[in-house]
Image (cartoon, rainbow, N blue to C red):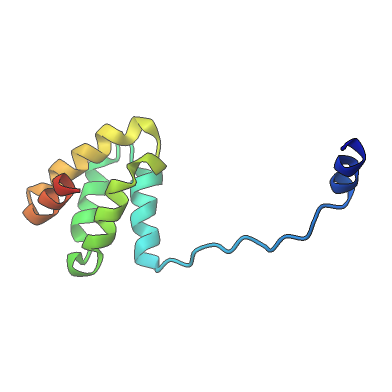
Length: 101
């Protein structure tokens, strides 16, 4: 076992490269807003930017990102909930979809 481990340490087995997902720019922007830019001081800015998005195109993806809140930081959960409450004032069906999920 030690010999095999030393061999594979020197010459690792061939593996295919990891293929990154290609996302449209709008989806990348939504992920950046929710998972990178969201902070206590920027919540109003993020809410304003989410309200400006074309909702017919990105509502389903927004719902998917809101449901995958675990991919962000634990401290952002209450900020995501606050964004959901802010968006519910303008898009009632979005708030209902979040609760349904």
